[in-house]
Image 1 (spheres, helix red, strand yellow):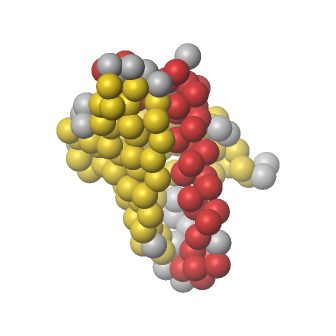
Image 2 (cartoon, helix red, strand yellow):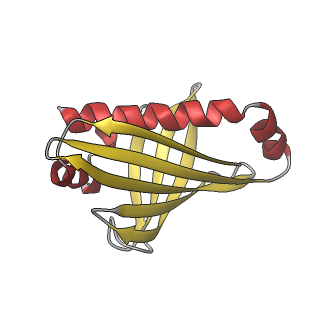
Length: 144
């Protein structure tokens, strides 16, 4: 499953990217985030692995993030594994619209297996809704 979502952040590109690169800032915009665990590598650099722990429906959920590419301020690409039957890759692109606003684009690819493949087929809109929720969370944080 693939999809692309975009929004506009009403801040200059350099400020948006500075806030996005802050390894501790995710706690301000990732809803439900309980804990961040650095596993290996330098945060924000290719190969870095970080575990994110979320509370979802009163259960702890771990998602591992690996940085695949890093060409900021333009682009960064991540792989996320949750151990629930697949993985997803997210390419985040930032583009200057003008001196006071930035376009944020999220290209998403899900490789699902087993039961998760059925879930993706039946509830694909749920994945998009969650991505948009995260993007808007970051937008709100970046605009403060």
